[in-house]
Image (cartoon, rainbow, N blue to C red; front, top):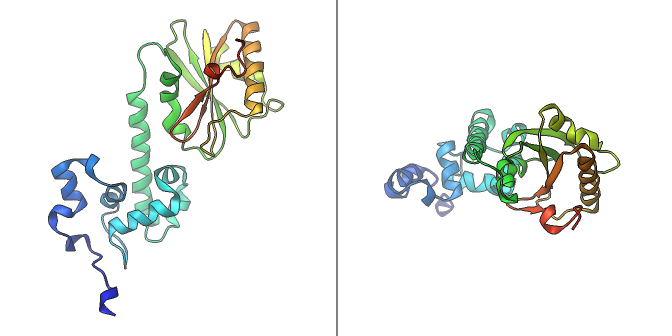
Length: 234
């Protein structure tokens, strides 16, 4: 029976194999995801060291994207976490989100769908509900503001197109980019997405506010409906 009692303590590992020491000697990029989580957790639970616990958390939540989407309460319910450790993990994820925003706050013009996607992709791909945001741009295609206008399944019969342009009118935006997420992770536009885009483009022409694009954000990827010719006149 003694053989079933594996070594569970990080301190039982060779020093050069411990996550914290490996990070110090080689840099965080050389650590596995479970090892990075282990550093945040510091200690494991009975039967698991912190690395093994990190591996279990990733498996139960469906990877890093699942950790990002999980609520604080859901994290607390995982065996061995509790409020303190759950807070540490959620804080680390939030720091990553804010770092992403700082890295992609473009001082110049948005010149491609990729530029626009990078402004919102990290946060939007972690949302558990579908949301529609509007990026407001000035005459030089520089971001003025990002307005979050709708939560829920995008149905052209339920979304009031005028709401998409309210912020643009208030802030004197010259153009807008519509962005919404697909929580499933698949960014393929739906027929409803195409209908809504077509309605928004037409309304924008009437108000002299150009809809430059409509992006659909998936898990680690996105689709530009303008590039696909969906809802935009060719």
